[in-house]
Length: 83
Image 1 (cartoon, one colour):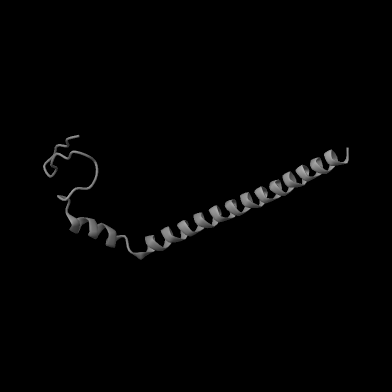
Image 2 (spheres, rainbow, N blue to C red):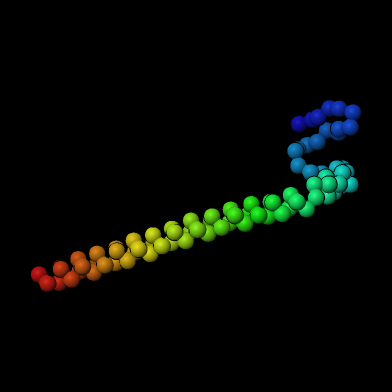
């Protein structure tokens, strides 16, 4: 995966290597400001809240199904013991 151009050197892969200019990377991070951090954090929190709600609903369904299954087994056991 070689790239050609006036400022590019051939790279063995697409990942970061030690010859990248760290000043340009830090400049890019700080130039966006704190506004993007806040909005990104808020989006992550909203996503985690949705995940928590889905997991909670799923666990409630599992509890109900387990309760119904155990009661069905108890009923079958009792009816077989009466005969």
